[in-house]
Image (cartoon, rainbow, N blue to C red; front, side, top):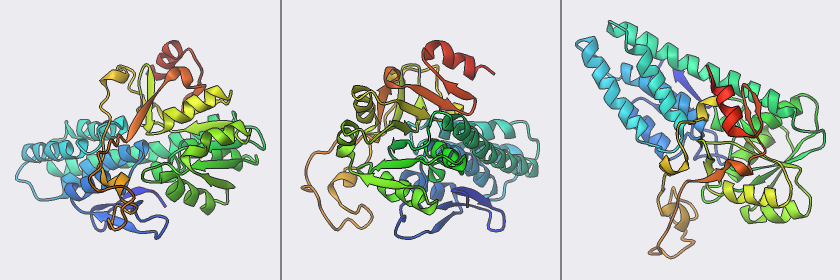
Length: 346
């Protein structure tokens, strides 16, 4: 099943509610842009590629929310709703790409039904392309893995972070599909445990060998030579850094110290090559994520309630720590300032 998809019968965006995993598998039906925006903000859907498709479906959803007197009124309404979607997560560039692409697709439509048809078709195309890109990322990345390798990964980069298949976990899946024996060490990924809740759940569903560790164990398992390479995803790749889940930079520094390859797997839509690290807004999230054991019910305090909290959702890893970038167009090796523009070129 896809992580996010359009339900034509109910005219809504449906998605796997990732806040419920691994306790229960539930689908969330978003019948308004506001519902979808809230789902994005509370991380019911997350992961840069998945957000690209979600943003696209959100624009299509706006077209079906109500009746319109004319096409110009409709387009203005859709643009306002698109701004709501764009405001939900400031760091992941793919979200903006999906939204902008559908807005551009409907700009030349001259009647209401054409807008609806084109918006939905474009959103579906974006979702299909995401799956195709992930399969190619997996194909190219699998060549970097040897039979018997142990891969350390961080956060969740599987089908739950995409429409299907995955980026970093897609590389693992592709290697296993080729017949290689690959084991995974998954960091828990505090504070919301996307590694323990989501990555472990996904890999166990697929029958792929996975071992869970705390984030603070990463250096220990590397020093004990239990890791052959690190593969992570990305929320934005700029000229001098990779933005990914907070804690990624620490893993990269540890990998370099221990001589372990550190790979980043991401589609080219994650690249924002016209910007550098200092120009990117890093999302800061609620203090509740750090002071409560279960944010949803807020019952168990694990820190004093009035403690000061700093909770950025992402950090930036200098490209000098990255051994290679795995994309749907191939594996990009350093020097990145020379080789990335060659790949991104239309």
